[in-house]
Length: 375
Image (tube, rainbow, N blue to C red):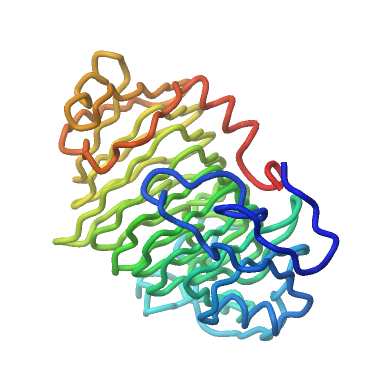
């Protein structure tokens, strides 16, 4: 599909280049990342860190797992134990005084590097080679930037035994970002999170969010903290992802008074999930269509957001006027009920895509999500 470079530096050839594969769609369809910049493969951490955060448009090729876990040492402080289940409950760092006085205090020792992410500047394509290239012990932070592609990388091992131990990908005030075909596991808190400033033009697609963990809030090995979309004016496409062995926030949307979010959730595979999948709060407008829920205890918690989630072709007809097509029914298998037909969740912002049926997307996501598929 793409030529193999014989040199460390090779030219980016086409619109999204030899490096980024495919075309962004949905809210992030205008994303071009590093554009036509010459692709570069870092060979040391100093270059990697500099290239990620500088103001130069870049296509950065990752050809290995960059392990930052021990680079900044460990720190011991007083945290808390919010959950008293067994075995292996997640404990928490006392970040922003999160620990309630009702929680028992505990001594926590953690890798400092995982709590200080790598900064990413505008106009970057960050592309992994193969199945196991990416970042261990550090996540990525995109503050007030635009035009970033993150594709085919692994992010893992961020103090996953502690809440607030680290986020895999943080965005705050971003425009045009495509997060595609990545694999995320063993994260202390959120796998993806948007800050209070709006993230507009964000597409999260074809990723694997693996919640299988030794430590968890329910002591069942299912990670609770998957995705949190909290920005005022977030416009997000969440499509063709695999979310499994989780127990909540898959994603959590909204919840701040006066803030709004428009999130299109389609053609994802959810399950098994011991708690809830979708978690929209006040301010959220969500269209969930063509998703496959298998072994999901609670597909949706209705906490005030406007959600439209069709289950039949008749339900789907309500989308015709806003989208110019019928919505695609969701499928539930071995899962709890899904009752959400608030048409305020249907927005013309969700036009321009053609979701597959839930059964077709189930097979597609199972075969195509994650790393090592496209590059």
